Length: 259
Image (cartoon, rainbow, N blue to C red):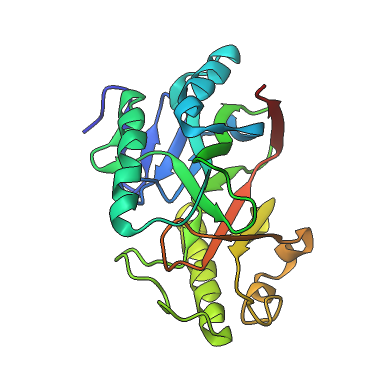
């Protein structure tokens, strides 16, 4: 089975996006678990200054990719900032227009998204409306090296259950953080990657997580933690979630003016 823009399932459980030059680890309808570019390509991440409201984001992505000679199917990741966490019902409604756009771009395969995504609810100075703060895409590689992209991993299981729900005690926050670390580790393994290749690890939480750098949490990552941990006072996009974790390997990061 192949869709009309070349998304094809592989025997290793990944999808092949031949038009966009990357392989996809499927995750769910709203976002994939992660992507790895094809040989000879790499992931580029572009931060926006200022952020763009989601209603304007799609045309901005199309315009930028066209300007550099890349097809829209090269789009592989989007990072959103939302005004506040949403209930599960509102979350489903929130995804409708986004998924319609991915279908227009032929970046949906069956019931699976082919694009990484993170949605973060900032606790301090949140945006008035859902906005895109960054997006990623593939380009021909300019040098040797590993790049990849993962979706943000919240403290919510694949069954929709929140880890340690309604509990923000020190032990519960440690448990939530450990869950995100383990899940990201599993995703990296399925993509044939490891923490060693990451160039950025970002953590989002509000309540204190004791012994964050200890061997039970991020100290267990070893050498990769030398590059530091970017920490935000923020939450996942679902009410009840308290911890989200991001990891990626990107050599080119751009800052694009949007005014």
